[in-house]
Amino acid sequence: MNKQLMKDALGWGSFLWLIGYALGIGFFAFVPPALLGWAIMPFGVLATVWVLLKRIKSREFGYYLLLATTWTVLAVAFDYFFLVKLFNPADGYYKLDVYLYYVLTFALPLAAWQYKKMKRG
Picture 1 (cartoon, one colour):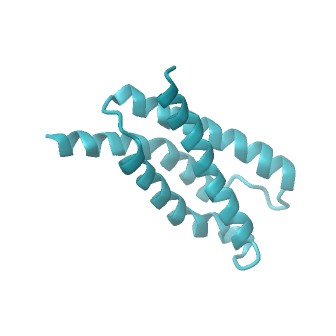
Picture 2: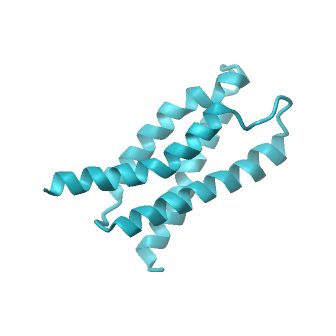
């Protein structure tokens, strides 16, 4: 795995997850726990799209597939260890918003690749 791919996959994937984590902690005092994921999601989607369109330079489908896979694995693992295990939410953690978040984490890199491909002509 080359250095840029490592940076994009692990670096940006961790950073994007950390943005959501920080927003969750910040919003916790103002947003009911049941709605926390829904409140964070628009910010996470915007940040992810910005990274994909402005910071990721590859044109290869495989690169974006690897980003999608790595970012999703990081999200699932970090959520489990730093949210589920650490905070042990009373009503559970895995609900529709979380599953949508995982789907978007995987789908957005592939959609960005498609968008960039169409834009190139």
